[in-house]
Each structure stands twice: as C-alpha cells, then as structure tokens.
Image (cartoon, rainbow, N blue to C red):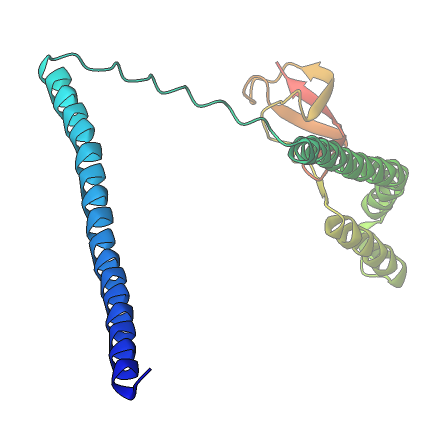
Length: 225
C-alpha cells in the first residue's frame, strides 16, 4: 500500500469517528427537551384536577350549605390539689385552736382577777371591824383629853388605815341625811320624824364601804317614815 492510500484510509477513519460523536451529541441534546416537555405536561395535568376541585369547592360554597360549627366544650372545673386541700384543712384547724386558746386565756385571766378580788374582799372585811373600833375610841375620848398624846396617836393610826384603804379602792358610803338606797343601805330601824322627809336616813349605826365600786359592807341605818 502506498503512502497516499494510507492517508486516505486515516482520513476516512477520522471522518467516521467525528460522525459518531456528532450523532451522540445530537441525541443528548434532544433527550432533555423531551424530558422537560414531559415534566411540563405532567404539571399541567396535575394542575387541572386541582383547579377543577377548587371550582367544585366554590360551587359548593355558593350553594349556601355551611358546615355546622362545633360547640365549644364547657370548661372542666379544676380539681383541687391534694396538698392544697391538706394545707386548707390545717389552716382551718390552726385558726380554731388559736380561737379556743385565746378564749381560754381570757377566761383564765378573768378568773384570776376575780379570785384576787375575792381574796382582797375577805381580808378587808376582817380589817373593817378594826376601823370601827378606832372610830369608837375617838368618839369616846373626853373633850378635855382630845389634845392629849393618846388621842393624837389613835387619830394618826386611824388616818393611816383609811389612807391605805383608799389606795386599795375602798371608800366609805355616805348614808346620814341621804335618801335610802337598798343597794347601799341596810335599814334596821324606822322612826316617825315630822322634821325629816320620808325615806331619809336619819342615823347610821355602822358605816358601810365600797370596794372598787362594789358594796363591801352595807351601811346599817335608821330611816324616817
């Protein structure tokens, strides 16, 4: 084979290879177009039923038929927590106990005060006869001896007793010349006296006393009718 024949054979082989590459390239370009067209067609086919569905929905809405609204369920009451209930019970129990204790304390204090006052009354009732004796002793002093040392001593002791009784809340009851009062006086005698109004105390046999505004001893008196 000559060199010229070899060149021709190589040219024909190169041309054949170029033709095969061009055919392959052409097929590759045509294939995406077909796939793109098929995708677009598929999207259009899918969109059409959706549009038909929306149209049917509009028609249904236009017919005036509406779905009934569901009634809202009533709120269920919240159940109290077990701890909250226990706290409430303990709080109520504490309040009751505190009220009972406060009442007990007040009652006990009142009883103590009452017992103390009763003790004082018992002691004062025993002292009053001594006061009566001092008063009788002062009344029995003769006129010419009223300035003597003995009379002055008795008077000072009597005054000291009365000052102490006054500080303790004891004071004498006014009786002579006052209207008779059964709450303060004890009438042991009645007399007819034209010079005195009716129901007036004309004489006092034993002096009465009050202790903290309560009768410690009633006055023994004589009352005019």
